[in-house]
Length: 132
Image 1 (cartoon, one colour):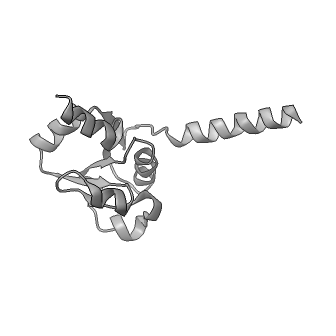
Image 2 (cartoon, rainbow, N blue to C red):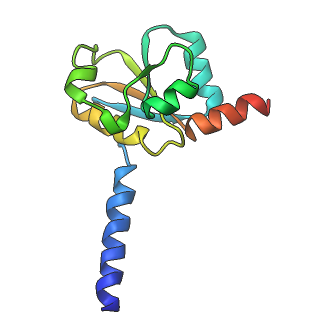
Image 3 (cartoon, rainbow, N blue to C red):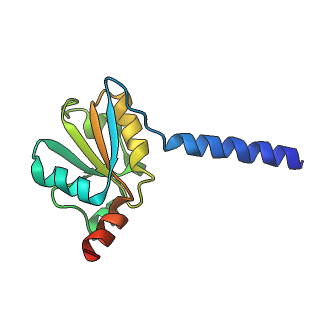
């Protein structure tokens, strides 16, 4: 019985660990940016989509200026991003950088070319702004 639980635990660890892996290739670029790097992209460019993948409740409490809310829990890929230009840069974020990589993986499968993720999520963003 202990062997069964050990195998089950190992399997779940691999599955969960694999969920947070997003690999770049020649058609797709994925990067986790620090809050300062993320802020620089927001400041220095205007040709991007900014997507908050937290829940509507989290989004309504506070969010980055200009962000649209496509909750990961309700992320209707076809409806939410169907009309978006796949060649345009996408910036995604969630609360702690656990949901946003999953969205990035979906976007990769849909043909998006470049996705930036906020390392540490909105929580780290806010902490970095108040500790500056």
